[in-house]
Image 1 (tube, rainbow, N blue to C red):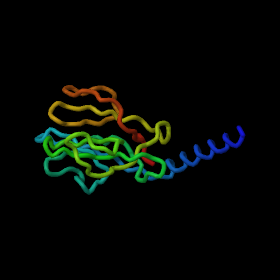
Image 2 (tube, rainbow, N blue to C red):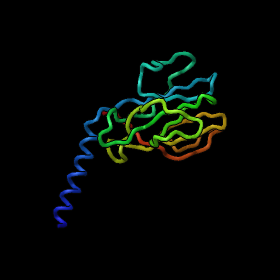
Image 3 (tube, rainbow, N blue to C red):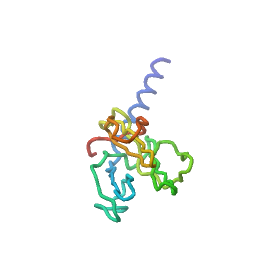
Length: 153
């Protein structure tokens, strides 16, 4: 019985790892608009390209999975009152936010050099996401919210 359980768990582990490894990585790009004082994140280059309409491309955050057979979706929400975007593994939007789209799929920690992405919020409604655990000036730390790979795959 123990042998069957061990084989079953090993099979699930290899399947999980294989599904994460064969997924294609998509770059999570970070933009900033100094007029709106907001950050925006996307894996779709066609949304803002190299930057437009006041949005300037900054340092990318990392890579998400492009498909999700063994991963959890990263959701993007929008608040029309604050013009802020919020990103989460939870499909339920926070109060005042509306679902926009799935931007990619979470990287499993330890797989593909997965590292946490930390969320920081500003009182003016901006959310900032980075792999750094150092709180930017004027922001409050909310903790890790999803994971990215630091290398392309």
